[in-house]
Amino acid sequence: METIIIIIFFIGYLAITLEHNIKIDKLIPALAMMALLWAVIALSHMPVFEVDAALRELAPTHIDEILLHHLGKTAEILVFLLGAMTIVEIIDYFDGFATIKGFIKTKSKRKLLWLFSILAFILSAIIDNLTATIVLITILQKVIRDRESRLWFAGMIIVAANAGGAWSPIGDVTTTMLWIADKVSALELVKHVLIPSIICMVIPTLIASRFKAFKGNIESELEEEAPKTKFGSTMLYLGLGAIVFVPFFKTITHLPPYVGMMLSLAVVAAFAEMYSSSKFSISTVDAGESDAASHHSPVHHSLSKIELPSILFFLGILLAVAALESLGMLFHFAEGLNAAIPNSDIVVMLLGMGSAVIDNVPLVAASIGMFPQGMDDSLWHFIAYSAGTGGSMLIIGSAAGVVAMGMEKIDFFWYLKKIAWLALVGFVAGAIGFILIRDLLLNT
Image (cartoon, rainbow, N blue to C red; front, side):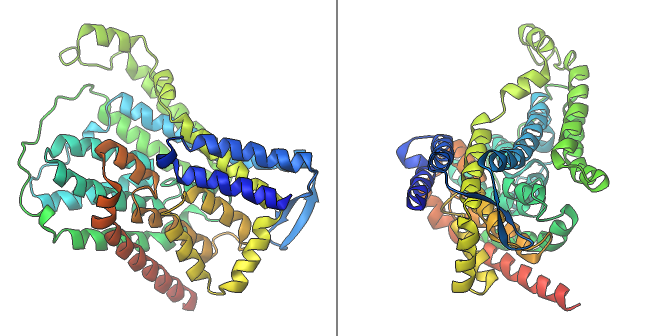
């Protein structure tokens, strides 16, 4: 039966990886794989275990109990992501991200490269790398008319956004998973991964700034658009502040992060409802649209725009990996891997490079079940860095890359030729920086 389990997982994983080739959304094989794995376990009465990482042993349990346990851990992540996504959509409802466009005053391509890279790095740490990429490429399309130039900027935004998401507990799904699973704490994650992430962003940007594509000035005039609502800036700062508040809430109360995120969502939603009746300026929007907006709850509107396919994908893949963990497969695979490659740094870097080919969410989910190291062990910090930044090496290797690919119609091989080696240089430089800083801290 274990062979059947492995075959189902392999086929499901392959279908997820080849999503763009077979034209089937990855949530479909993820959900099917999850259901089939647990069905095989139930029908064949295979023994399931809860891995006690501290004691490195498998504790037998009942399938209903273990499934409920894993569903609870998965739900924590999903509810957290739902809250964060809703806050971001509320900000967008009030056109809050237009405020960021006001920071762009220069026409120099080189200065714009650094500005977009820094914005991507900072924003992705707060609103996650996927959303930051969407926001910045939307702004990019209004600022730069030449498509070839825009492709280069989009490529560098992907690298910077993934680097920015790696050092923040709310910057990437994988770091959020590690944080919620109590593998890393927010403060220690920032302490150990911030500088390597900066290196990972700065080195490729520094190299790219010498390229011909980033010389000279942009040709088009920077458009001055009247704000659609006077509350845009207020909702932007309120929303970003509410998301940043969550790690502090967890540190103070020791409650799971989704509780803090629900509180933040409640506060942002309350202000959104108060502002919604006077959202639009009558001078910039016709009366029909203003009237429609005034009778439409911004919270309901924002909830309707959430990416539910992503939420269902996470549900499927996390519970599928949990099935392998419950059978003890990941536990035994980790032991074999450590025996074959004793150097954990090499293992983690390979995991990072692997995340460019296959989704980093199941890779990190598997690593949580594989390794027994305790909270804030340097291994988890290195996994957060590698899984977060490694995906930049291929356009399909990260959520930020996939969404940029869709928005700008970036060719896979163009990215492979022009950007991939820059991402690799940044990844390796940041990894070396991480190892040096870790060894320095251990020796002091």
